[in-house]
Amino acid sequence: MKKAIYLLVLLALIVVPILSACGDGEEATGGDSGGDSDGDKFKIGILAPAVTHGWVAAVAYHAEERAKELSGEIEYQIQTSSNAEEMTSQLDDLMTWGAEAIVAFPQWEGMEVPIQTALDAGIEVVNFDIVIDAEGVYRVAGDNEDMGIQGAHYIVDKIGTEGNVVILEVPSSGSVSELRNKGFVETVAEIAPDLNLLTYATQFTREDGLSDFADILTSNSQIDAVYSMDDETSIGVLQAIREAGRTDIQVITGGGGMQEYFNMMPENDDIWIQSALYSPAMVKDAVDVALKVLKGEEVEQVTVIPTTVVDRDNYEDFLDENSPY
Image (cartoon, rainbow, N blue to C red; front, side):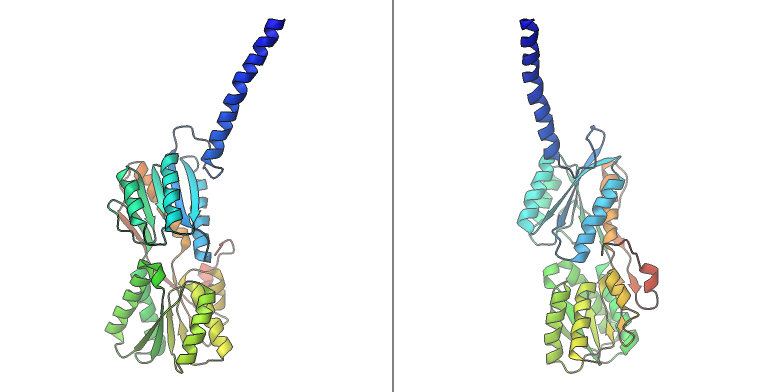
């Protein structure tokens, strides 16, 4: 009897540490994995910026939604970061976790080297939105340059070929602002060279749009149109115009696909409010590209989502009560 009890105690001492070790491993994998790893699923990591903008929040939301939909085929982890250093550290964590592909949305300079390191290690990288100079990276993005082209045509259609147009660029956004500005300026030079373009720097937030445009209004007595690159910036611009009591501005563009901004379009019948649709939901395409590459399917190196223009004439076609943005 004593021998039997001794064996039971010994068995318990062996089994309990093993179970504890299994529990620790599952926790390290993270509750954000797409399901229990059975060795048959592809491991995909997703890197996104911490939420500083509604559009960015929607990117993380749609990425996880798509990853959940593919949970029968993939394991996934989503990491969010506040700067390039933190994202680099999280990229290392995903490599240690065993990611076979990484969908990266790097909003800061300095990510080229760590992403190239991942590529050199045999990990497939699908870059979302921002252009990264790394050899072998796949990319999914909207057509930023065409957004500028469409904005130029829209403004000229509404105000004609003469007038003062304020350009609100966002240098901190890198290639996004550069390409949108390039498309706009080059198109204006072709179709309305007499337009007077006034360029100012701001950020993709309504707070910056409000404060920066309030200053711009003070220093410019006549503005006919505003080429804004972002819906949230444009909401701030609209507030600044209303608070200043200005009636000279006829057009404000935007970009993104924000539901709140769409709903403003019919409410402001004295100003043409436009958005070049750049839906955060296209990150789902980036997740799909990652999976296709891992499956060995043929995929284009660059996938560009066409531009769609939204204004008061068609905004109802783009309303989505379930959208987080």
